[in-house]
Every structure is written in C-alpha cells, then in structure tokens.
Image (cartoon, rainbow, N blue to C red; front, side, top):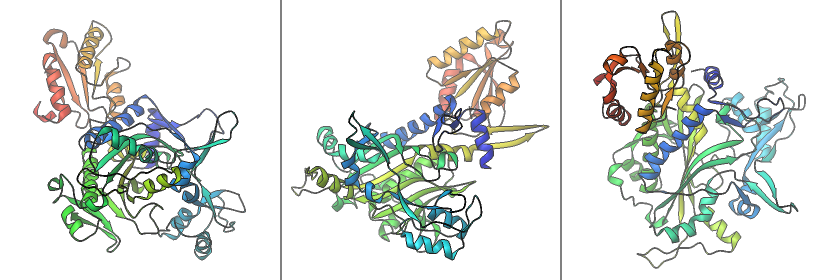
Length: 500
C-alpha cells in the first residue's frame, strides 16, 4: 500500500506524527505516538515479551539511556559508529553517500567502503543531487552518529545517549549472571529508546533519530555453540535464508543449515527459528520474510556473522531485526577498558572464559510501521470506500468496541453497563456514543479493532447484543451473559467468528 496513504491514516487518527510539530523549525527524525498508536506500540512490545522473552525464559532489565564516554570507547562506537556523508556544492544539502550511490547506481554499496572509494563511485556513476540535480559534490567524510551530552554543572563529565540498547546488557551481565543464579546460555533483554544522529532521517518510522528497540543478547560458552536445549522443536523447521552464494531465498531446515555450516552452530539456527516464528505469530506471511546473509564488509564492526531479518513491503525489503554473532567483542572490550575481570566459570567446567554473544536486535517502530503496511486494506463498498487495518487482534489497540445505537431511551446507560462488564473481565474495550453508528464502525475499523458490540432497542427486551466482525462485516446476535466466555475464546483463538 502506498506510503502516503499509511502516513495519512497515521496522521488522521494520531497513530504517529512528528515531534514538536507546531514548531516550523523542529528537527526531523523524531516521532510521537498518539493514544491509539501508543496502545499498538505497547502491545507489540508486550507480544514480544510473551512470545519470545517469557517462553525462552530470558531475563529483562531496564538500563540507563545515558552512559559515560569510556563505555563507548570500549564498545568501539566513538571510532567506528560512522556514516559516510557527502555535501552538494551547489545547494549545500547533505546526503548519506553509500545510500545516495546505491539509489542511483541500483547496486548494493557496502557501508565499510573507504571515503576515496565512495568518491570514485560518485564520479563513476555520475551521481546527481536529489534536490538540485547537480553532480558537483565535496569529498565524502565520515560522520559519527553518537549524540553527546554533558553531565554535571561543570560539564567535564562527557557522556552519550546510547546508540543501541545492548551496552547496558553487557555491562550488567556479570552482576545478573551472579545474582540470578542461571546457567548459560543466558538471554538478557530490554526494550527502550536508542539515539542516532542520522544524516538524513526519512520514511517516517523507518529511519529515526530516536528509535525503539527490543534487544536480546544471548550469552553462551563458545565451545557449546552446537548445543541447544530445545533443538528438537526446530530441527526440521525451515528458515527463509537469502544466501550470498546463490543470491536468492531458499527454504532450509535448521538442521540442514547447521550440517552445511551455513550458520555457526545449533544455537544460532535455533534463535533464527524463534525470530521467524515470532513474526509469523504477528501475522506476517512467511513468503515475504527472509534472513539476508551479510558479507564481511556489510556487517557491523563487532559482528562475525550477521543475518538481517527483512520483510517485503510496499517500500521494498525492510530490515526489522539485526541478528549478529558478536563473539566476545563487547565483553572483552569492557573488561579491558574498566580493568574488570569479566571471565566466568560454569559449574561443569573449571576453565574460565569470556562468554560469546548472539544478538537479536529488533526495531519496535519499524515493526509498527511494517505491520501497518501489511494490514492496510482499502475496498469499495457500493459508493463508499472503506479503509481498515487487518491487525492481529492481540496487537490491535482495543479488542472490542461498545456502542449504543442511540444516546436516548436508556440505550446509552445499558451500553455503559456492558462496557464496564467487559472491562471487568480484563478486555481492552473502547466506548463511543458520538455520531452515526456507521461512522463509529468506520472509526474503529480504521485503527484495527476486531469486534464491535451494539446495544439496540431489542437489547432491552432480550438481553442480546449485535457483535460485528471487522474484516467481513458479519453481524450476529449473542446473549450478554455469554460475552465474557465468547470474547475470551475469540481472543485466544479457541473459536472463530464463523462458529459463533
């Protein structure tokens, strides 16, 4: 679905919109989420917690968004967290060089290319400025994307907003491992904001300066990378892998991926399977998912092996998750910089070692945008055009809406009683009595509410209400007394609307 229509819906229904939008000079790349958008966003994180974090028995922390300078010296971000930037000499606009070249040359341009190599590609492909069409550019420069802050009244304690949520996890690992009394492999996670001073934020939530992340860092003994406790559950599960060797997507079982050494071990194949299964549960069709294998010069500076989890949208393939085998890069770096011993011993072995890490770094806002893109529906219903979001009910902002047919003759009071009943059973419910019933249906359809209940004059006689399903517009009459059990079964998929 065209990006403009999704953005139009988002703005019209306050799902998301630019930060400080009443100020004409507010910087780009910062977005805010309105009431319904925040509910969807919160449910995406909650879904991730239930379907991945809890089921894999990961431990969740809440880390600081600001960390001292030595942390990022140890992590390599002060030296290596750079993007190539080039400026047009005619209109002075700034562009990210590798992406500018890629968009016009129609080829992948590795992030790791040197600035002279990028300069040569700009000349070779006669790259033009997107704003003024000039081909006259300054030399490409490296731009560090860290956001610096000063701590304290004297300003002599330099610190940075975190560019990724994982550094707190690495710093906390020794304490968490010791106090929580858990064995490896041990997954530590957190969800929160990260900050990157992007050169050219664009495509709304897909390239932001403040971005939401759902981060998983799995710590393990590198000698046991071929061990996975629940391997039998995924051994025959097929992953959609885009391989460098063939340059195409292939359905390969986890067992085969390990046997052919496509991945470094069972542990990595296991967690790739859990990622793909998670997004299946979100409602993303497997046929439009892939794990793209990255070449060495495409990978982040800390990664030995990287699989980018991508989903095909109206904008093309969008990366949602970076799956990185970070080895002991981070733990070793922090141990050296802080002069702390980060080696551990397992109960079954006296040999000390620095844990290796496999990372599953998911974008919250990117997931939000892609789920909107995939669920956006527009259809003709007679002379009217209908727009609705075919969202998974578990991430819809509300599970059910409650409407009185009209506001008089006791119908509103009866509908409010029904609303309170439904809320008392723990369902996310929405109440609306304003406007025609048709417009109220249309409003909740647009934000993806799967069911609506209408209290009418017959309700006062037979204690039954009309339940309407979002996608098919089918309506049925049900007893109020049966609603808690019915909604519970619908919410868990224990029954379908067709069987009501």
